[in-house]
Image: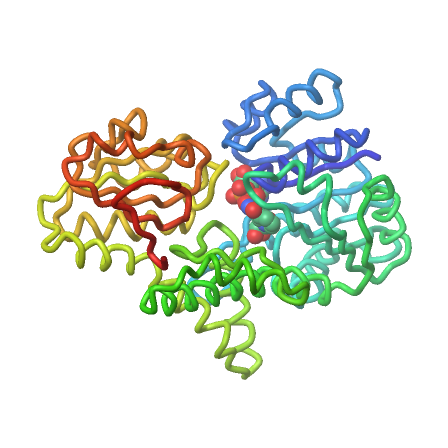
Length: 427
Ligand code: NAD
C-alpha cells in the first residue's frame, strides 16, 4: 500500500519504518525541515535501538522518504496516519496539533479525486475523532465522510527503547471505525502482522489506549506504595512482588518499585483522562492518587539522601541515569528532572552521567557537571543516586565505587548486585 505518515517523531518514524519493512511505500511528513533532512540522510533524530539501521535499509531500498510537503504526500498515498503530538495543556489534552493536521488534510483532500483514508494514531481522548477530526475534515475538504474519504482510529502501544520491535510485534492491533471500506483496508495493511486484530468503534478504540496506560501507571504507583511500606518493615519488596507476580491474574510486569514513571505518555495521558472524566462530572479519585503518589516518589529519594547524609549543602552527588527509562534519549517528564532540581535547590553539586540523554538534559540544566563515564561521576562524590536501569550500570562492580569520597549509594531503580553501602528507595 502507499502510506503517508504525518508527524515523524518516536511514533511516526517507527510506524513509517515498520510499514516500509512490511513492503509498503511510505512517505513521512514533518513540518520540522531539519528532521526531514536528517531522516532522508539516514539519521534518526533521537536515539532508538535498531530504528536507524532499518531506516537506512529502507531508504536504500527506496521504500521510504521524508518531506515537509503534506500535499505531495497525501496525493501520492492512499492512507495517511496522523502521528502528531497530543501534549497535556493548561485545560487538558492540547488538541491544537490534531486540529491543524485535520484542517490541512481536509484542504488537500478537496483536490484529491480518489478515496483516501485518514487514520488517527496519536493518542486522543474519547470523542476527539468524531467531534473534532471528522467535522474539520468534512468542512475543509467540502466532502462527506464515507463516500470520499474514510476515517479510523488506530492507537499505538509501542514503548520507547523497543519501538520498532513493538510496532512490528504488538500484543494487539486496535482498529476503531464505522465504515467497512476503511476498516477492511486497515485489516489488509496489518494482515501479515502476527497479532490479534480488534475492530471496534472510534471512541472505544480511543479509550482502549487510555485504559492501557492508566492501568500500567496504576500498577507502578501500587508497587511504589507497597515498596514504601516494605522499606519501613525491612521487607524486600522485590521478593514480595516476585511471589505475588506469579499469580497469572496479577502478572509480574510493572511491579518494580522505584522512583516512579515518567516519559511522554503515562503522566500526560493519565492527566488527560482525569480532566476528561471531570468534564463528564465524574471524579476519578483512584487515577488522581496514582498521579499523586508518582509526583512524590522521586522526591523521596532526596529525602532519603538527606536522612543518610545530613545537610546537603555543598555535597557532591553523582547522578547515574537521566533518561526516563533505559535505551532511549527521552527525558520528557523523567524523574531525574525533579531530583536534580531538588538537589540543586538544596545546594548540592551534581555530577551527572547518562549514555544517551545528556545532550537533551544540558538544555534544561546547563550548569551541572556532565561526565564521560560513571567512574568520572563517582570520583570524589559524597553520594551516588542511580535513576535509570541502563545495562551499563548493571555491570558496575563494588570496586568501581571505591573512587567515591563517601560510599553512599541509593538506587531509584534496582540495578546493582553485590555492592556494599548500597540501598534502594523502597528496599
Ligand atoms: P514526537 O513529539 O516525538 O513527534 C511528533 C512529530 O510531529 C514531531 O516530529 C513534530 O515536528 C511533528 N509535527 C507536529 N505538527 C506537525 C504538523 N502539523 N505536520 C507535520 N508534522 C508535525 O511525539 P511522539 O512521541 O511520536 O507522539 C505522537 C503521538 O503518539 C502522541 O499522541 C503520543 O501520545 C502518542 N504515543 C506516543 C508513544 C511514545 O512512546 N512516544 C507511544 C504511543 C503513543
